[in-house]
Image 1 (tube, protein in one colour):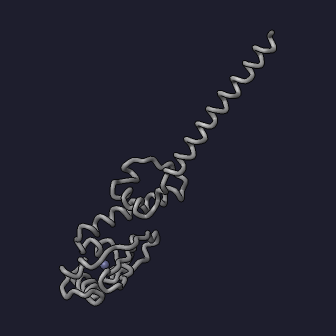
Image 2 (image 1 turned 45 degrees about the horizontal axis):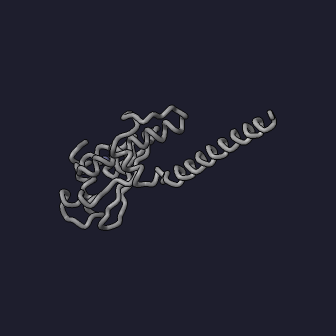
Image 3 (image 1 turned 180 degrees about the horizontal axis):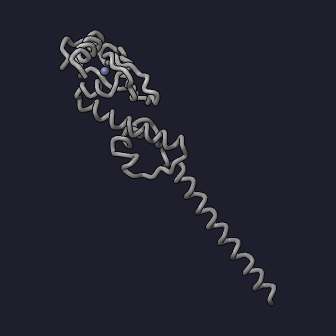
Length: 163
Ligand SMILES: [Zn+2]
């Protein structure tokens, strides 16, 4: 990365931010998506070419989007929350491609982290299971009742028919 690239990025970011300095402006942004570009055809707003990861970032203050941004420029934001969402989004990308290629996905750190699970949970990936559990209990208890009554009646009949 050259200074020229950073100046171009800073210009684009400041133009879409309310804050007037880079240090304050970066706080207004969050990453909203990341996609892979296998042909490395992406061009960053800073002018850098041949990008593989294409980020879209959103300014929560001005409601403006910047697309696309490369990994190197995303790292220049140096905001902790932004770093966390980069990690989560990369895990989700990996998870999605594993599902797409029918790989076995186990609940290990290869695919999951606390932050990934928290993100999935926040996006309703886990439907409530209370209803299902309650139904299962009802079915089990009614089956128990019916199997008891089924086994007891023939025995009674056998006893009577023996006399
Ligand atoms: Zn860039």
